[in-house]
Picture 1 (cartoon, rainbow, N blue to C red):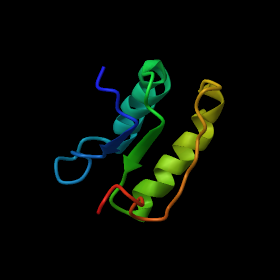
Picture 2 (cartoon, one colour):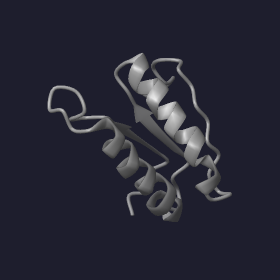
Picture 3 (cartoon, rainbow, N blue to C red):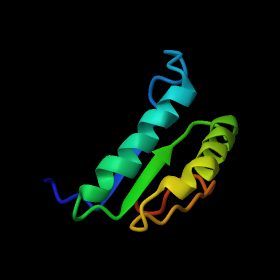
Picture 4 (cartoon, helix red, strand yellow):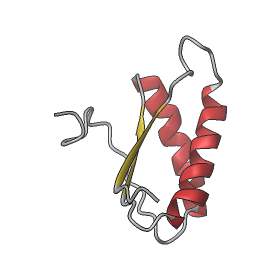
Amino acid sequence: ELELTQIAFPAVGTGVAKFPFDRFLEIFWKITSQELPRMQHLREVYLCLYDSDSFAKAREFADAKAAELSDKIDLQISESGFAVGLFP
Protein backbone atom coordinates (compact mmCIF):
# COMPACT_ATOMS: atom_id res chain seq x y z
CA GLU A 1 0.00 0.00 0.00
CA LEU A 2 1.26 3.48 -0.86
CA GLU A 3 -0.15 5.05 2.33
CA LEU A 4 -1.97 7.72 0.30
CA THR A 5 -4.19 10.06 2.28
CA GLN A 6 -5.81 11.70 -0.77
CA ILE A 7 -6.60 10.56 -4.28
CA ALA A 8 -8.28 12.32 -7.21
CA PHE A 9 -10.15 10.74 -10.11
CA PRO A 10 -10.50 12.92 -13.21
CA ALA A 11 -13.30 12.03 -15.60
CA VAL A 12 -10.77 11.36 -18.37
CA GLY A 13 -12.27 10.05 -21.57
CA THR A 14 -15.79 11.35 -20.97
CA GLY A 15 -15.30 14.37 -23.20
CA VAL A 16 -13.50 14.07 -26.52
CA ALA A 17 -13.18 10.27 -26.34
CA LYS A 18 -16.96 9.99 -25.69
CA PHE A 19 -16.74 7.39 -22.90
CA PRO A 20 -20.27 7.38 -21.41
CA PHE A 21 -20.33 9.62 -18.35
CA ASP A 22 -22.97 7.47 -16.65
CA ARG A 23 -20.73 4.43 -17.00
CA PHE A 24 -17.77 6.42 -15.63
CA LEU A 25 -19.85 7.35 -12.57
CA GLU A 26 -20.78 3.69 -11.99
CA ILE A 27 -17.11 2.66 -12.11
CA PHE A 28 -16.03 5.55 -9.89
CA TRP A 29 -18.77 4.74 -7.36
CA LYS A 30 -17.86 1.06 -7.26
CA ILE A 31 -14.19 1.83 -6.63
CA THR A 32 -14.97 4.50 -4.06
CA SER A 33 -17.61 2.58 -2.13
CA GLN A 34 -16.14 -0.94 -2.26
CA GLU A 35 -12.38 -0.80 -2.74
CA LEU A 36 -11.13 2.42 -1.19
CA PRO A 37 -12.59 1.89 2.32
CA ARG A 38 -10.11 -0.98 2.67
CA MET A 39 -7.18 1.43 2.36
CA GLN A 40 -5.92 2.23 5.85
CA HIS A 41 -4.56 5.72 5.24
CA LEU A 42 -6.95 7.14 2.65
CA ARG A 43 -9.05 10.00 4.03
CA GLU A 44 -10.20 11.99 0.99
CA VAL A 45 -11.33 11.07 -2.53
CA TYR A 46 -11.92 13.75 -5.14
CA LEU A 47 -13.92 13.43 -8.33
CA CYS A 48 -12.59 16.01 -10.78
CA LEU A 49 -15.11 17.22 -13.33
CA TYR A 50 -14.84 19.64 -16.21
CA ASP A 51 -18.17 21.45 -16.29
CA SER A 52 -21.35 22.25 -14.38
CA ASP A 53 -23.45 19.74 -16.36
CA SER A 54 -21.14 16.90 -15.32
CA PHE A 55 -21.21 18.17 -11.74
CA ALA A 56 -25.02 18.21 -11.72
CA LYS A 57 -25.19 14.64 -13.08
CA ALA A 58 -22.59 13.44 -10.56
CA ARG A 59 -24.41 15.13 -7.67
CA GLU A 60 -27.72 13.52 -8.69
CA PHE A 61 -26.00 10.13 -9.00
CA ALA A 62 -24.32 10.48 -5.59
CA ASP A 63 -27.54 11.59 -3.91
CA ALA A 64 -29.32 8.52 -5.29
CA LYS A 65 -26.53 6.15 -4.17
CA ALA A 66 -25.52 7.72 -0.83
CA ALA A 67 -27.45 5.19 1.27
CA GLU A 68 -25.19 2.42 -0.10
CA LEU A 69 -22.06 3.90 1.45
CA SER A 70 -20.28 2.43 4.43
CA ASP A 71 -20.49 4.33 7.72
CA LYS A 72 -16.75 4.95 7.29
CA ILE A 73 -17.43 7.24 4.32
CA ASP A 74 -18.57 10.83 4.83
CA LEU A 75 -19.96 12.05 1.49
CA GLN A 76 -19.38 15.75 0.91
CA ILE A 77 -20.23 17.47 -2.35
CA SER A 78 -18.72 20.83 -3.23
CA GLU A 79 -18.71 22.89 -6.40
CA SER A 80 -15.95 25.15 -5.13
CA GLY A 81 -13.53 24.69 -8.01
CA PHE A 82 -9.93 23.89 -7.13
CA ALA A 83 -9.33 22.08 -3.86
CA VAL A 84 -7.04 23.98 -1.52
CA GLY A 85 -3.64 22.35 -1.33
CA LEU A 86 -4.04 20.10 -4.36
CA PHE A 87 -2.96 22.68 -6.92
CA PRO A 88 -0.11 24.81 -5.50
